[in-house]
Length: 111
Image 1 (cartoon, helix red, strand yellow):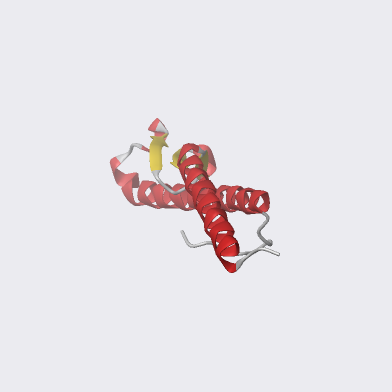
Image 2 (cartoon, rainbow, N blue to C red; image 1 turned 30 degrees about the vertical axis):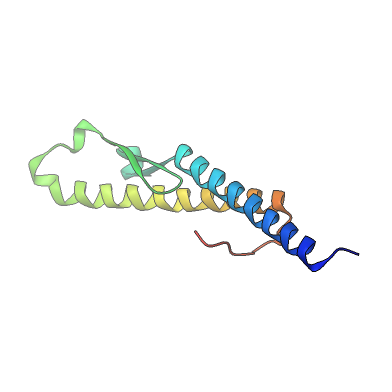
């Protein structure tokens, strides 16, 4: 039977391993890209799985001064689409990381 000191040391090592894996997963999320679309693909926003905007693409046909409010709405819609996809990818990656650590499904780790 292990002593209390050995069990505490093992728990600390496990916590350090989990922290390292979570840090690696967070770094990976910033490297994964998703693309949000709106207006049938006329407006595209690329962002990381952490939600960092990487790029915006606007079709030339939308560059009409009188269409500014529509363009603004399309940019917001494309970002929201990308954000939903980013959240989905982030959740999948975190679930994979937790599964690899032997944590139960749905276990919430602080970010």
